[in-house]
Structure formats: C-alpha cells, structure tokens
Amino acid sequence: MISELQARYDARKSFYGKAQVETLNGKVNLYSYNTLVATVCDGVLSLTCDWNYSLTTRRHVNEFVKQMGVEEQFTDIKKRW
Image (cartoon, one colour):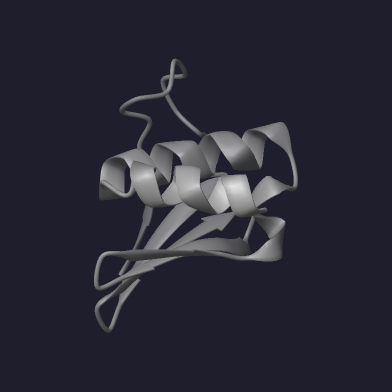
C-alpha cells in the first residue's frame, strides 16, 4: 500500500505528493521525490545515502521518523553520518 506522507509535525500543511510511504511485507518505506530514502522494519530505522539530498528531503525524513517513533535512532545515525 502506498500513501502520501501527511504533515503532522511539520509546519507545512502538506508535502504536496512529494513524499510517499509504502507499507510492504512488514516494512515501511519512505520515498522522497520517488527515491527511497528511509525504511523502518521491526522498529529499526535504515537510511539510504539520499536521505540528506535536499532540505525538503530532510523535512520528509524528519516527519517520517517522528511518525514512526524512531527519533532516537535517527539522532544516533546522524551523529555517525
């Protein structure tokens, strides 16, 4: 199932279809501008090299990790990046 990422925590009202969330076989994937940038599987966050591509993509990732409840993992990953 694919749906648009809703802006719940971001100041913007919408991401205007630029961020999509795909739920497939227990994994939740985030696509920003049709590019896979993040995955959560069994509560574990994984980022692709493209997660930091642009300010807008970072906003999408920030929203996604908040909605998925993996902010602490995201903070740890960013420190190592």
